[in-house]
Amino acid sequence: MNYLYIVLGAAVGAPLRFAIDQYIRKFTDKPYGIFIVNILGSFIIGLTFTQDEHIYDFLAVGFAGAFTTWSTFMLDIYLGFELKRYREITINLVMSLGFGLTAAYLGLQLVG
Amino acid sequence: MKSLLLVAIGGVAGTLVRFGLSVVIPDDRTGTLAANLLGVALASALLVLMERRGVTELRHLLLPGFCAGMTTFSAVTVQVVEPIQGGVLFLIENVVLSLLIVLAVIPISRKLIPVRK
Image (cartoon, rainbow over all chains, first blue to last red; front, side):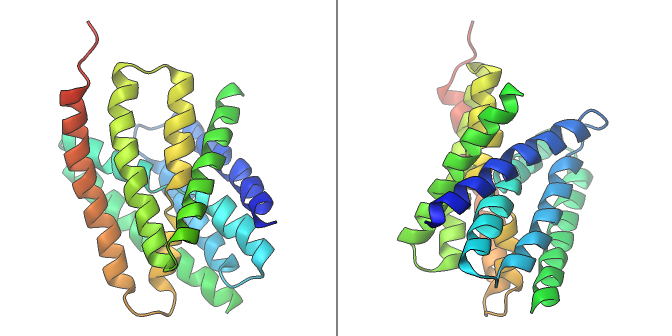
């Protein structure tokens, strides 16, 4: 039953993201928490992308899927745009995508 | 603690919707794109709604819970670098279409949902 693995992965991934983000937001108003989570999750999904079905469901679809977020990433960029923090949102976009793609690639290569 | 539980419940529900879309849509990249664009549209509207009408608990359930769980950054990055052609185009679609959706939905939602007096 792959639903069980997906549910378990998401039940860990989503609150772990929230806890990390809430903790980092105590020190800064910049979205570093989401940045860290998205890079880490990209590495983990790279490692598990070609693994057997249960590991894939639990770690790739469930855990990494819920741990990382696209909607918060996009909303942070929009809110930065409204506040005219153009330099900050450019850095966020370039660094998140650059490091995220590199992390996923490294993960894939390590197991491939 | 209560917030963590609400985020977990919302996150599981959102993840199951993302998984459901991947079952309905056979192409992996299109499934991810659909989950991300729908999630971004929903998150944009909910951001305004929660700002103006919401309570913290409901916001945690729906935004960092449901919408953040439904959308995913990691599937985008891994599907861009996997050795199948068209990765760069897929990345551009995710970024550009998501930003266009946020740019459209947030102002519309602000018009439709007045500030409570």
